[in-house]
Amino acid sequence: MTTAQIERTKLSQIIRDLPDEKITVVLNFIEDIFDDEPLTEEDIADLAEADADIAAGRVYAWEDVEREMAALPL
Image (cartoon, rainbow, N blue to C red; front, side):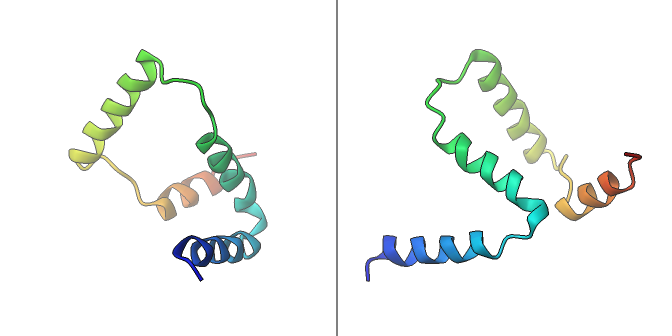
């Protein structure tokens, strides 16, 4: 079995095991991978800003974001 075949099998298993509430997020991410639109100047500036935030430690744990979002009124 090739590395690609092993990784494809692993990816398939991960997708099968996804909790329902995460399916849309993962689907959107995967669709974005195949987006062939070039990055705009605004996209590039946003990415540079995000890199600077990460470098400066301005990040949040996903669990903290989920907890805060769950507390928001519907």
